[in-house]
Amino acid sequence: MTREEVLGRLRATLRKGQPIVGTGAGIGLAARAEERGGADLIIVYGTGKYRMAGRSSMAGRFAFGNANDLVLKMAQEVMPVAPHTPVLAGVFIQDPFRDMMGFIEQLKQAGYSGVQNVPGMGGMDQMEGARTVTSLDAAGIGMAMELAFLRAAKDRGMVTTPYAYNLTQAVQLAANGSDMLCLHVGLTTKGLTAAQVAPPIERCAQMLSSWIEAIRAENPDTIILCHGGPIAEPQDFSYIMRHVEGISGFYGASSIERIPVERALVDATSRFRTLHIAPRPDAV
Image (cartoon, rainbow, N blue to C red; front, side, top):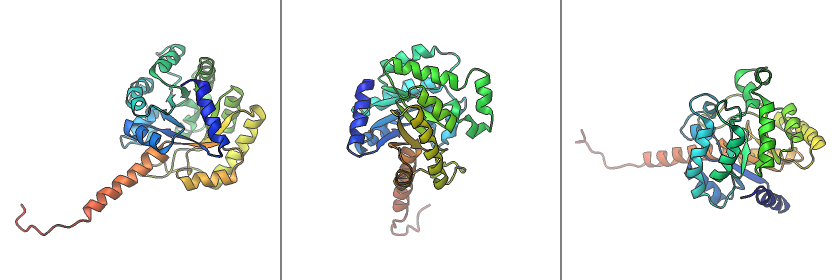
């Protein structure tokens, strides 16, 4: 699906008064169900494979495997079972042993309609502590690489929908011409493998409002979505929509493919567990 077709569909959704819903898919089953549920976009990234293997999404930020190889391989698992939904690729843009401009063409040939900066170096402060992003920038493997890749991907006809983790990044990415910008307020804090630290939702609403004001001053055409932290369920996103002007949608990864599945599996197993049979005293 072309960039123009994807953006046209998204704008049509907004004209109907519906928010854009992007969903992460770490397995084909998730993608199949998400398309059935009406997802506007499906995003495939390395963190999803770890998440749906019962590990923390944070595992996708370590060198356990090549994130870009995984995304190419996952195209064959996801796209055949979600043929009517645009699929975007989460790209590790700082891959030191890959021609990243050539990789854009590989992604297009694999069927991806757009790109996102996952695992993005902009979020490393959340894991490694303050000044990590500054150190990465100083080493030449930080945000500048992501900005250049995203510009090139857009020029080559791909939708760009990066994460921004703070106000400075949000302004940079808006000025860079991002089609959509997803404001990331922390790792999702609900479920069995949840992060334990995130701002309260009231604080997130304040943060998002200040970021959006700055984004609008830089690029009023950017479509703005949110993700993460305490925004984990429909009622949480509803709170954000009521308290933050300018939010057009939500990206759910753990919120859509992990937390509901955890609950459904626990419930189904426990319901079988509560059934009774006649005692079998001779069982050995």
